[in-house]
Length: 123
Image 1: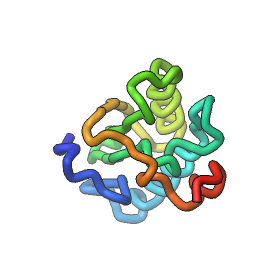
Image 2 (image 1 turned 120 degrees about the vertical axis):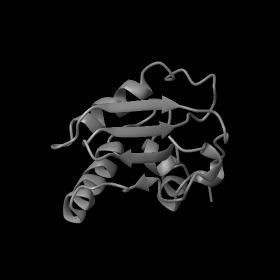
Image 3 (image 1 turned 90 degrees about the vertical axis):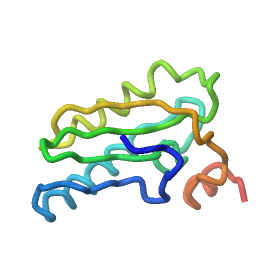
Image 4 (image 1 turned 120 degrees about the horizontal axis):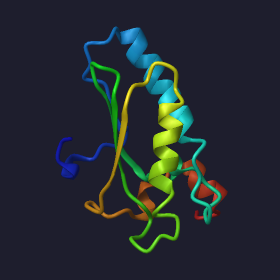
């Protein structure tokens, strides 16, 4: 994993020897899978909330996910990383999935997409 200080707006990393079409498909389907994971207390998916900092697809099809939570005291802290792992692992062609939760940089509401702001009425 690279340093979390360079978190990107688009968290997908595609430095892979896989064919570009396959990397594109995997990226698209992984994002779709991540959008099925919701924090039980927030009616927006974790991707749109900005909780996913990085997704890296490797040459062997393993996937590393770097994510955070809205707060270290999040009641779903024990289950969300497993939900993310299961969602990503459900994508056809994905190998081993490793999910790491980090706290730096800290999550802030500015990381949310317009879609999440709309759902949460945070305009």
